[in-house]
Image (cartoon, rainbow, N blue to C red; front, side, top):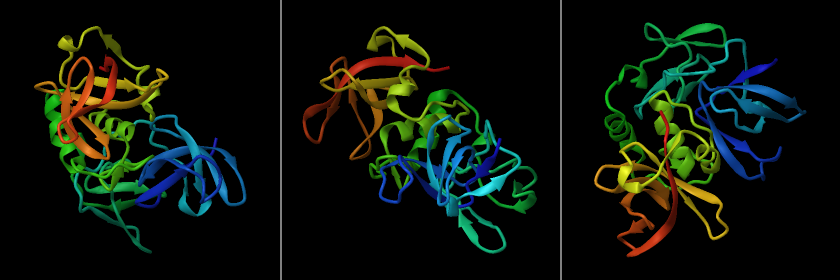
Length: 252
């Protein structure tokens, strides 16, 4: 079983082996993956942190003998840089610090010094952690397949915030809706629950995180906070409902 690691800040994950193919996700520094198929220019990968699959340019990956199946040390600041000798890499918010200990990471078989604030040291109630981790995302532009404050989609936002709390969700909204326990009534929802929304065909196409006072954090145009009720998300700027509520789930 061949594994690889992301050696760059943010790498696009494509639906097909082509630079012109749709970006379905992003691969962040330090995350690892299993190689399912290797071609001359592209590799089909299954990512260790969520089992998602996609294609990555072979020039944007590196061999890895020590995969991170549950990487709980992730960057939560916006200014960390790691010096790999031949280049410096800006660590995006949410990047993995592989086997971080005593101010260094294990990368390509060597200990490399790095100074970063990590999610590992934080503890508290779920909503306290969400409110602490979400601030760099507020106002971030919507980007299909995105997972960082530079651009993020709805399920990328929920996945990353839960990942920073050590809870590993699948990549897409419909997949995330299969996790956890159903909350039968919105009145019983608690801050930190996931709310899911469907389209006219009944397919789940959107997800957000329930906040106190009937608010919801979600990515729609940008990462924003709107009001939530039994009908769905009410956008106060547009003065209309933009998403129809399907169900609420609690993931422990």
